[in-house]
Amino acid sequence: RVALLGDAAHPMRPYLAQGAGMAIEDAATLASVLQSGTDIPAALAHYARQRWQRNARVQARAQRNGRIFHASGLVRWGRDRAMQLGGERLLDLPWLYGGG
Image 1 (cartoon, rainbow, N blue to C red):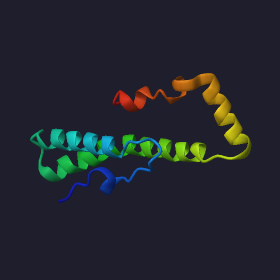
Image 2: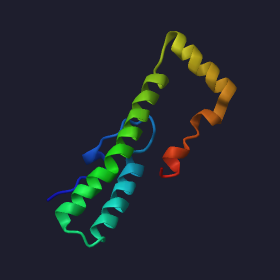
Image 3: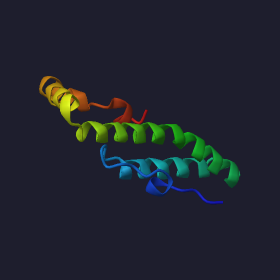
């Protein structure tokens, strides 16, 4: 049996800077399930189920950011205006940095 971690399991686009972060979370989750005493195939399956949803959410946000960062026309204007008005609040992602 094999468990993939980080970019080997779920490559991230560079628009959220989370490639290493997801790899660290993967490693911590894998260590936890392997220490649970469950047989290894069941532990690996549990690991995969636990990580899938979070990694998919991070990947989707990175893809969205890429579209926004490289926007043109009205979308670019809207992005720039939103950043002027909202500033750092627009970049606050408690679901990402809080581990949820």
